[in-house]
Structures are given as C-alpha cells and as structure tokens.
Image 1: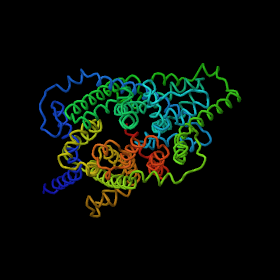
Image 2 (image 1 turned 180 degrees about the vertical axis):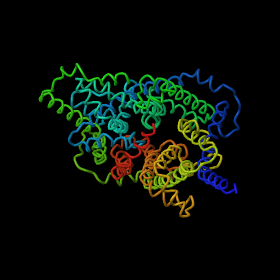
Image 3 (image 1 turned 45 degrees about the horizontal axis):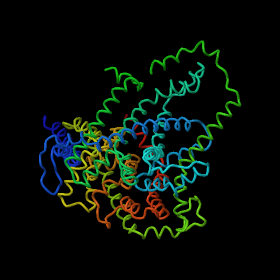
Image 4 (image 1 turned 60 degrees about the vertical axis):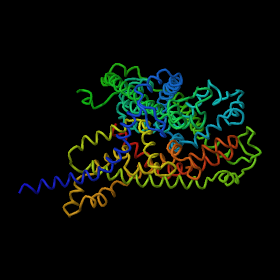
Length: 302
Length: 295
C-alpha cells in the first residue's frame, strides 16, 4: 500500500538524475576533475612529453621572484583600474542620455550597441590598422586638426591607453544593462525630487545611482573578472610589447603553457589568477553593504 | 543610500524656491544632448565605416592616409579570400559553431529541465555547485583539459572545440532553469494526467513555451564560438583546420601591411555577428532581462 507513492518519488528522482547526469559527466571531465588536476599540477614540473616531477612550492616561489610576473600583474591592474570605472561612468552616462524622450532613439541605441556585438581577432585587426601611426585613419584624422598622433601600439606610453580605448568601444553592451535598470526606476521618485527643487545632478546622485546600484555592482564584478583575463587583443596586436608594457597576465600564462610548455608553472599562474579574482570579489561583496542599495532590505537584515 | 532616498519623502519648504527652467535653457540643454549623442554615435560607427572604406581601397592606395578610396575595388574580396584558404577557414568555423549551437542549446535545456522539474536528493547541492563553477576562471581548467585532449590524441581535430559543449554550459543551464521556473507547473500536471511521460512533457509542453530563451542561448553560443580565439589557437596547428579567427590572426602576422585585404576578411568575419544582431535584436535584450533579473 505504501509502495505506490514511494515508487513514484523514486521514479521522479531517477528521471531527475538522468537529465542532470549529462552535466555531471561534463563537470567531472571539464570542471572539478581539471580543477583538482590543476591544483596538483601547480606543485610539479611538467612539459607533457616526460612525466611530471613533484617540486613542492617551487613554482610559487619562482613566481614571487619573477619580475615578469610582477610586470604582468602591474599591466593587468593598471588596465583594470582605468578601464572598468571608465566603462561604468561612460555606460551610465550614455544610458541616462538614451533614456530621455528624444528623436532617433532606436537608431542611436543601435549605433552605440553595435560595436559590442562584434569581438575577437577581426576587431583586433581593425584596431591594429586604425592605430597604425603612419597610414592609419586615426592619426590621419588627428593630423587634419593639427595634432601629430603618437605611435599608439608601438609606444610604451600609449599602448595601454590605446587598448583601453579599444575596449571602451564596446561599452554599449553595458549601456544596455544600465538602460534596462533605469527603466525599472519609478518615475514618481523623480517627480517628488523635482517638487523638492533638486537639480538634475542631485536627482541622479540621490535617486538614479542608488536605484541602479545593484546593476553597477554586478557590472563592476563582471568587468573586473573580464579585464583580468584580457588576452586576444594583446596577443594579436602587441604580443605584450613594446618591451613588456602591454604584457597582460594571461599572456604570460599562455606563453608559459603553450610556448615554453611549462605546464606546472602555468597551472600555478592560473591559481594565482583565481586567488586575485577571488580576493577582489570578496572585497567587493564586503564593500557592497556600504554603497549597494537593495529595495528588499531583508536581504541584508540577516 | 537609503537615507538619502528617504529625505525626499517629506515634501515641504524647498518647493517655494523651485523655479521653472527658462525655455532657452531647455533648448540649450536639448541641443547639447543631441550634439553629444550624435557625436558619440559617429565615433561608435566610424571604425565600421573606416573598415568598409579600407576594404575597398585599391592596392596602390594602401599607403595613402586618405580615408576615401578613389574607386571601390570590389575584387579585393575574392583576392583577399584566396591569399590563404579562407573558404576552408569559414567552413571550419561554420562546422564548429553549428555543432556548438546545437549541442549546447539542447543539452543545457535538458539539464535545466532536470533541475527545474524533478525532486531528488542532492539537487540543491548540485545546483549550488553549478553556480559555483561560474565563478571559477576559465584558465584554471584550461591546462588540465588541454593535457586531457592531448593524451586522447584529439589535438588538431575539432573534437576539443565541440565535445565540452555536449555536456551543457553552466551559465546557459542556469538561464534555462530560471526560464522554466516561470512556466506554470499546472501545464506539466495537465499533460501528466493525460498520460504524458517526462520527455513528452519536455518536448510538447516546455520547449514550445521556451523558444525565446532557447534562441537567446543559441545566439550567445553562436557569438562566443564564432569569435573564440584561444581554444582554436591552442588546439589547431595545421592550417587546413584553422577557424576564421586563427586564420585571420595568421594573416595579420604574414601580411601585416596589406590592410585592404585584412579589412576585407575581417569584415566578412564580422558579418555573421552583425546579421544575427539585426535579425534577432529582441533576443539580445531577452537574455539581458533574464540574467539581470536574477542578480
């Protein structure tokens, strides 16, 4: 008598496992398994051809004493610290402007969004040509208004700004996120502020910013994680040069793994990257309680 | 921040100092808004315009810094495509991308169905694990997975680029599960009463309701596979296997000043993404709404 409901429950569970098992197999071979393997590998010396040799913490101590490691970390940090906040500021500003009732809205939104649809090597090739100091269109344009443009990607001073500008070209992707958030802000708040005589700037500081702060937070975390992992632009355009002035962290990791076949050391680098991202994320989540405003305060009450 | 919001609720005192903006100040503000917005849009679109114009420049004008070609050299496109076997590269990219779109969309849907509609021990834990894997940087698994495929002898085949997709993608599973959550269970139950099994319910009830979400997942998979560079770079080292991304990178290295051809090929590589955007604009926004609602 009791068997029927139980067997139905068991059947439910069996189906559930059957559907989910597909992902579990993937998790073992491409997720958890490799994560553990990479942890073990980071304590070894391994070039694929010969068996791995246990060398303890040597990869990690080597890392800390390597000036190239610190240089790659510095380049990546500078890029992140400049490009992420700039991306947020420009993204929000554009979203606020494009949230106004104006003519040609559809066209304008599409124009700003379009660059974020394209990415990869083709975009890198495009910017490589744009930045060409002698025959590129950018310096030609600057020359027309009487400015001698720099050598961009060939200049130690300008290579990072050039890559940052290139990254900001696709700011439209985050603009759309802010736009979606802005449209959730009740207009009654602005009306109340207007009656109070608050200026436009004041309205945005006191209403817009807190109301969309969860999205800003989300974009900040994602933006930092993304810019820690910049690779394609640097690989295609500069190979980390001139000198090591655009030598991003992941480029360092890639070269160790797939050019020098130092798999153990590269695995250790990957863990250093994970640690850096993890620490920054924890710090951001901690800071969120001071500046991210959740309407549902019960979320933070506990 | 909540404090500053509250300060607006008492509506008194300041109201008397409020002044209506003068019409010319408004006009000035509006004009400024248009000038900034149109200027920005021109900057956003200019690289595309430059790209097209350069792709049409005849060879003898490469070294002139003028933006405009004296005449449009359409033969640049066939010429550029034959400097390297780009026809092959496009075909390779199409195969890898098509396989990923099919596999990742269908397997993510199936796994999401398991998470969304069935009760079993460990489900909550597994779903938490799924979300946790989203936080792990891709590069942590890159090296062991490469060694895995190397030992299997799969380097220089498309398998490393396709097989991981068969097991679903954590982010898309998450997205689909959230979407299934918004479909009333009564629909399943009604079908169940009529004797439908779990697979029938998935295909006859849930999937027809989920086309928008599945198309969004398909589009995201398309864009990320088509534009992927690192994976084809490490797994494919014979030219006949190159995808467009790797082939184009090789081209950039070999013919570094043949900009007109470079832009012609780059343009062709971008066109599928731009076409998808114009034909499926609303699904781009769909994904944003689904993913941001959950944060």
